Structure formats: C-alpha cells, structure tokens
Image 1 (tube, one colour):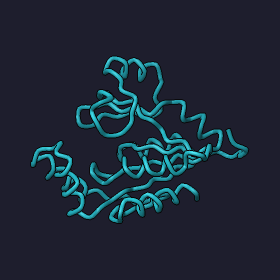
Image 2 (tube, rainbow, N blue to C red):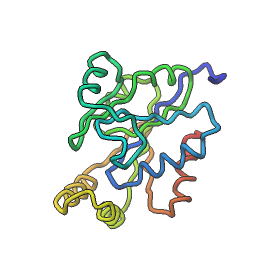
Image 3 (cartoon, rainbow, N blue to C red):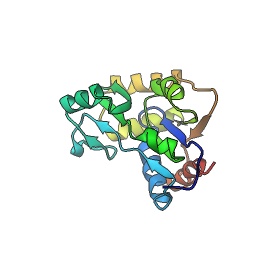
Image 4 (cartoon, one colour):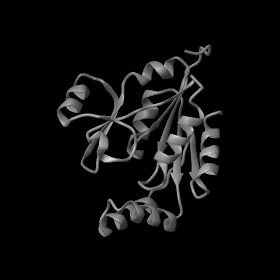
Length: 185
C-alpha cells in the first residue's frame, strides 16, 4: 500500500449541486491515478448506473438498507429521494495512511470529524450566475428546484478547522490542476 505509518487524511468534498464537484473529482482522479496513496471513493447510490452523473455503485433500496443495517457504511445519508453510502472499508485506507477523497453531504462533516482523526473539507463554490447557468444547462431541475438550490447555496457558509474554500470559476483544466494540488499537502 504505502510506506507511511501515520494515519491518512479523509478529504470531504462538499458544495452545492452544480458547483462542479464531479468534474473536479474525475479530473483529480485521472491526474493522481499513478499515486497509490490517493484513493477516490466510489459511493453506493440508490439510482441506476445509466442515470448519468458520477460513476457510482448502483444499489437497490433493499440492498442499501441491508448494507447499512449490517454496518457496511461508515457514513450514509439521504438527499433528493436517493440514498448514499460510503463503504466502511475506507477506515482501513485512512488507517494505512492514504488520502481518501470522497464527495459527501455537507451535513456529514461533524460526524466525519468525530470518526476520523484528520479530516479536511474542500468546500467548492461558484458565483451565483455560474451556478445558475450550470443548473439550467443540466435540464434536470424545475425552475422552482433551481431557485431553491440557488438560495440554499447562498445561505450556506462553511468555516472551521481543515476547511479549504475552492472557487470553481476558472476554465476546467485550470480548476482541475488547482484542485488536484490540494491533495499534495
């Protein structure tokens, strides 16, 4: 695995829908593919594989609930009528000294901080106009949903230990390079 004996870092990537988390994570994963000390978590989600969005492990609600009941997730949550689970196996990766990078709900930050000794949070933000354009371009939300997402994004602030605010308003290649550099700390 690696030669480090210290505990690794759990990197939580958070931000509003449309901020570009998936694009940044995909780019960083490709850039760090030859670095065994970096592990990008593939989440279990109760949606079909062909539903679009991130590469995930599609599971049924029954499978999700069974895994959750058996303690197979260290973190789990529900959002937008979907269930999300982070496999418990990441605990061993962090204990082995790896950088474990995962997209999670902002609501889980406190729980993750209680569970893991070194948690860093990358809070991805974008200016309102950029976020609005991206949400409209996806064509997945109604006008009311877009307005709710914009209001929620503006109302949310995140500060505290280990929080890095990343403004994702540059060309994609530039943003990916800057985002990837965060994990070399």
